[in-house]
Length: 149
Image (tube, rainbow, N blue to C red; front, side, top):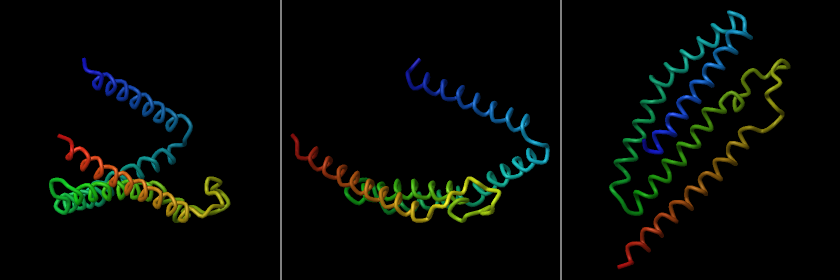
């Protein structure tokens, strides 16, 4: 058995255990109405992902593939932009509730008195800089490797 197969097996078992624990917590500590509400939101999330987000991601990936070409500086830049865009979009979607201050009332103590959009912009700036540096390093490494006999 290859090492990757073993790691995958461990991750699958670990993921199944965490999901089972979450299901137990949901059924044990929530009312039926709360559990049904979680189920409703889970179904909405799947439909939203499959009907909206996945086609957009596929279209952007196709477009970037057409723009990037097979190799070279342009392809490296497109790959870096795609990676940075994926990270920033994931952060934005994950933090949507706090970015829009959804549920901003006295009952939601999880929303801290912070400027979440400014924080996202700061993280996005760091991601863009790191992606740019990685692209420069990739181009420089490829050029150095091409010069060696």
